[in-house]
Length: 224
Image (tube, rainbow, N blue to C red; front, side, top):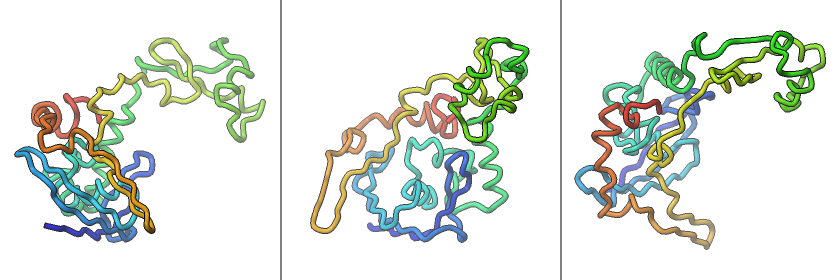
């Protein structure tokens, strides 16, 4: 049967790109129809009437049926019911803190250390200027004060976050089971083929329980 969700959506974190249903958000409307169910997951047709960021993902989460492999909105960071029905401001702050810890881990002294350009001798003033790609408000005077961060490999960066070494993502982390299938405008229609995971015979969702849901929405227990 058709389900219509008209819950408003607002940005919960600009830095992390996370959104949520909120009475203070902007009006949104999505129409949902379930097309099939294979015993593990359902294929759902989603028609966004409005176009807010993450609208389909957030509305599905609110309804209690997040995208099965969504590392953000199908995560236990949102609580036992993963955000179903929405969460309040305090719970939102806790969610953001959890995602923040995984996305931007605390930098340990043993991992990187701050050094000054005058001490390292590895970068001249011109080198540092090229490193920051002529960022606005960079002058010859404050370039000498620009901090450098050294990674565990000895490479230096002008950005602390860039000095944090992260593992390459798993192939499964690079795919989200959300596909732009059909566009309609005026009298024109454009439609693509359905991806493999949208076929009723698809068996790839069998790995979700042991490799994704078991770890609360983190593939093999790794950070989202």
